[in-house]
Length: 459
Image (cartoon, rainbow, N blue to C red; front, side):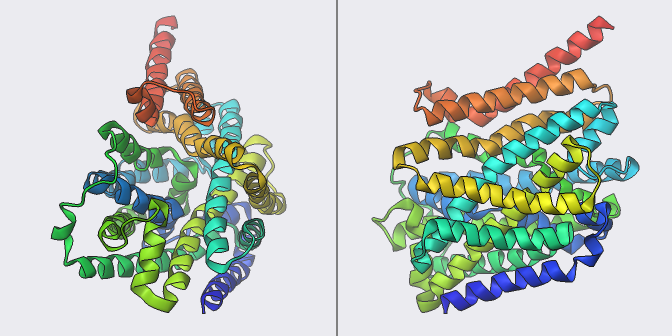
């Protein structure tokens, strides 16, 4: 039963890639789906890319461990990561990408600031940062699938990556947005069902109010995680380029409500399920809270439904990353405008991430944990490099190359510092350690302001 559910889903993903191959034969078709994406499809592809398997499994684990205080995280996911992202960033970046005919985020920054160097630098950052993050996503989903089906984790990683690589190479952005829609339906439906059943089993939301945390978490950590999973979205190329796929800012405006609703279901559903698991399946490892509760609530098909939901969440994030990495390296860094080359690069990007994941899974536990900590820095590295530069470009009319570059470098260095410190188990003051992303953004913003003032004075 489980194998059939997963196999059907994977075959459907490949079929979608084959269907759209002919429409993805041009650069614009492969990278931005010829700007033909409609409002409802934009909402689904954005949401499915935004929420990886992390929010389902790890978000539930956080709620299980730390209690109701963690609901701040899904609240910001919905309000900041989805609703405000469409209003503050989405409409404006769509308009600029259309006016300047830019197909990638690095290209937009380069054209606005008149610097090909910026395009290459941001392309390199995207290639490195997102490849590392993709490796963590593949590692997580291979561990889940391998556990459910009792398969070798390394084999699971390669099989999943190969399937994603195939449909991305076939249909480019067309494949990604349409498989995202399929993945989004699976993900949101499964989470909604599990959350509703869990809440029904405990007697409603009111009974979650007094859930005692297994261990208290510093409020600074909760706030930082909430910002990391919401504000960071405004600076992630694989999400920003979703706004390049539509014909006008009006499409973004119409998609805002549905995207926000999708975020509400997936984010709050995962965290509420984790809280309910605290009462229904107490005494287990937090990371197993949502999987075990899903299996108990859904009976024999529980494993298949949960596996499909987590697999869909991971694939909808990883496939977007692979396409973004390929376009960043080939289109932005090398300046190649061949659809065939980008198609091959997207295939290889996914396999490269899978290879890194497999190597990590083969390492001794202590070393693997250190390497994984560095890989997870891929998210903050990319967001730290892009967040302030993107917002400054969109809203500061006097933004220029030097402050943009200073902000990007400062954000990267700060994120690398925290990533290496965690990997090497360096003890930092609690406030600093628990506010790593917030500090990264503040460092980047400070660098931008200082460089901007210096640039104005020098003139």
